Image (cartoon, rainbow, N blue to C red; front, side, top):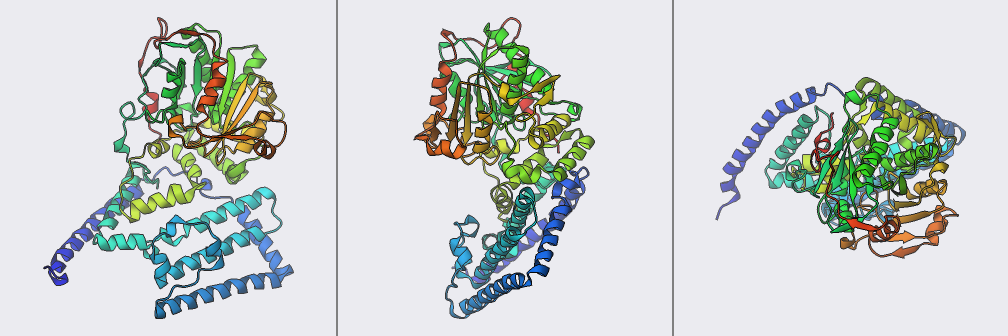
Length: 601
């Protein structure tokens, strides 16, 4: 039987080998960091200093006017800190468990602290409880600041929480029991693998710290994701138009044209056969066309919203009508593509164009009077920084938009993946949704500024009108039959904000559906999963809260309900259509070429 002494030479040899690998990797790390020669505009790394200056001034004014309140707060904090320290000392001497502080007891379960050592080990217990205490003190201090307007107050709370999340003890090796245990178990191998993962991510992104969320080698577009049969039947500088092969002998006469957001790739709607909305639509007997947007580079700097409308939406309608021989189409827009579909519908009304028979919106904002969780990033300091960035680069690079989205859920999308990859040395999972999430798209400079200034900040479309293509486009001019689907926990397009936009539309025929879950899972919710339910209520006259209070909840996916609605607006049944025709021949199989272009960093 081997003894610890017998294992020592082998362990020492392994440790020395790992140390040698660390020295080699350190050189690669330096080279990878040196490759960062084109960083994002520095003003996008945080809010303008005036926000913190105003908060500090307010704090000191309060201290001068009411010093007793400040002292009381500080003494309470000091008292709790000392008590926690004494409990940790007692725990160390007796082996007992410390009493969790009230703020920790009242907190929701936090999976970051699931290791039993956070409760049983005096050191980790003290570190965790002190972190909770510090976090609560920071949040309380931000909440008590007076003299700030509502937006600045919300921004201060948001960025204060970012500091809290960043300083979590789980983010540091010396205070993360999971990482320390793994390092001991593997004789340092996990740390070496973590360093390799870090360097690989830096090398893959020109020195930018972008955590890889999924195993990219596990997926192939057209191989095991985005596999629904179809053909690219048209291509221009803005998009490829894919016509999907029929899955039934007959189809409804009026085709569907679907516009995914150009912030991401379209195959979120065609990940796997089990989750594919695209496949499901064809199986219900519809001729489906889907736009695959170009991934912009610097040559697209001057591309604006008008180009997306003319060379994207209107061109897709034109080609679809020509191929199918129909005078009308049913249009679908997801997220920003739904917003732009509404702009297009307002333009078409002004021009007397009745090509769209009905419109379906997936989580589409059209009234930006409330900016929701994006409030911290939609103020002038950040927008000024974005304008400077796109003026230099011609585009808003994908990683900037990606990290902004990630910081809305930083614990889940930044710190947890970084810990698993860099501290535990784990390989990224083979998860199709996370693969898609990391396969982002750039945004044209001109379009980005138009969207952020004109729509988000000025809310022109919902208020005085958005000037585009020599036309004043108004939300009230959207008057085609309309069905809007929103998601209950959506942090990108809050459902109540979407509801308010639908209320301002001119359509008499309006249906509103609230799906459970978030921006992706609430939309990509196939009936076979029997997972998330949805709510309906025909009365759109009151507030969003009143609508939900009077709504009926239904089990399962909203897809079949939408199909029933769509069927009534899709005409008679006709023989199934093979993709393309004599004028618009197949250019290549789906998913096409544009979707394969990777975003620049």
